[in-house]
Amino acid sequence: MLKIVGTSGVTIAAVGSVLPIGIGAGLAFAMGYDARSAVTAGMCFCPTSLGIALSTLSDGKMLNTPIGQLIVSAAVVDDIIALVILSILESMVGEITAKGVVTPIVSALLWVALGGTAAILLAPKAMRVLFFDTRCLKDKPEKHSGIEMFVMFVGLIALLPATNYSKASYLLGAFLAGLSFCTSHGLHQLWITRFATVLQWLLRIFFAASIGFQVPVRAFGNPTVIWQGLVFTGALLGKFGVGFMAPNFHQTDRFKGMHLRDCLIVSFSMSAEGEFAFVIAVFAVDAGLISEQMYASIILAILLSTIVPLPSWRRICRSYRQACRTSFLNRLLSSAAFLLLWGLTSLKMMAPS
Image (tube, rainbow, N blue to C red; front, top):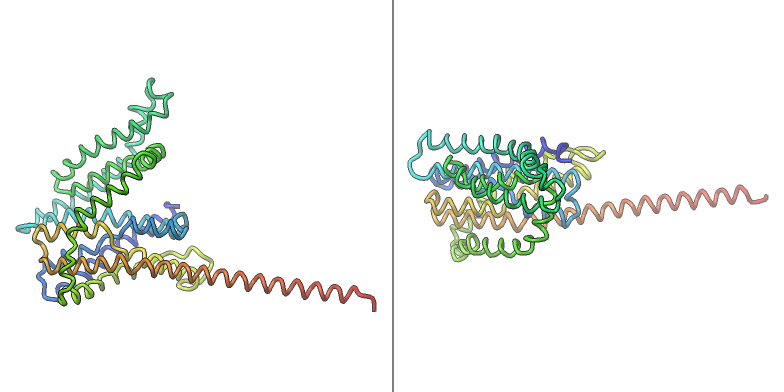
């Protein structure tokens, strides 16, 4: 299914990253910020929350549908673009030079292209040749998952400094280490059974301590922060608009009926900013690329983008489900009425005169 929606997912992710950056930068520039701060502000609205998208699609039983896979593929590509954006932001700290800006971009793109290809195509084959097809492990498939886990962590430790020293984001190394084993069902099951519950709490503690504690709650009482935060939410129009690029998977007219539902679902799913947007904003304010006041306004906009789309998404699903039930009930009643009329007519014709 990913092969079917892959091209559309990449297109939606690319456009859904460029438009918010442009709109956000334009809004910041119009509010009087300098070019560096304006571009940085726009970059904060690039990511889409894959975690929120997965959770919402699972709850709505749409994860394994074509539109669900389209959203997931777009969100994954969006996160990859966000990793490249983070590398660019690191080059904007201090004096900006052509070499300082170009090197992280080229490095990140090479890591994504070459490292991603190696992770998907070469890593599984290398694991089979080096480990699983050997005499001591060929007949012991129960040990394969543990070995994959060990190799993945070794790769993580190696890729973190490698990406960092090459001027790409070290988070890109963590992404590539996990991508190398994305096709391993055994490792996936091991991860779920051994680490899933612990990981949920670790992530909550980690994000609370690293991101949550940096949310400037007191600054939200500042009128300037409030109105600028509301203005920054306009950057999400770039995310919302790409929903109408969704392909039509139904036998209906475009932008009508079920296709309109799919467009709105993609729009609200892509509009949900998430954890990576906070990471970029925190890095920007810590590096001095944006002011504390601008940071508070951006965080307010990100929070609104995380909270508002989800109820809208669920309401759309409920309304279309109700419409489908009503339509089905009407068709059922019509069929029953037709059968009843046909039966009465047949009885009347069979009755003796």
